[in-house]
Image 1 (spheres, rainbow, N blue to C red):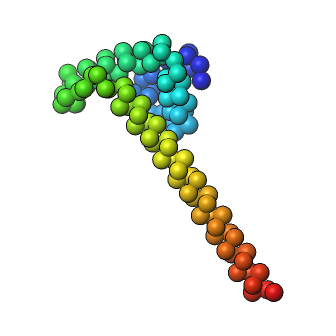
Image 2: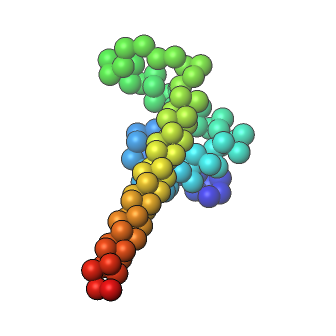
Image 3: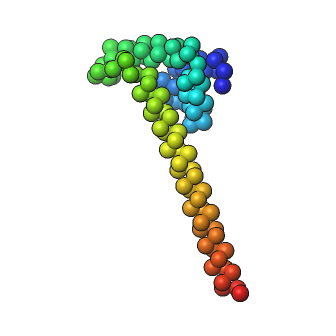
Length: 107
């Protein structure tokens, strides 16, 4: 993902509207691009301020606003990868057991 694509997705990321894969690529780019990270901080601060003025959020820790969001996105991505790997391993184990049982039954 490049800077132009990342900046186009800033508002969608803040609103939690990105698909899993898109969010993963977005966070990966933000973590390695100081300019886009700074842009995200500005957008997040403005949106959080607007929400606070509208009474949607009680208190906001502006110092950790972006880092907490990025950390949560990364943790969600790790959880999704773990779940996918776990599911794959379970299916593989079930297949192996099934073939073993069939082989014992037929032979």
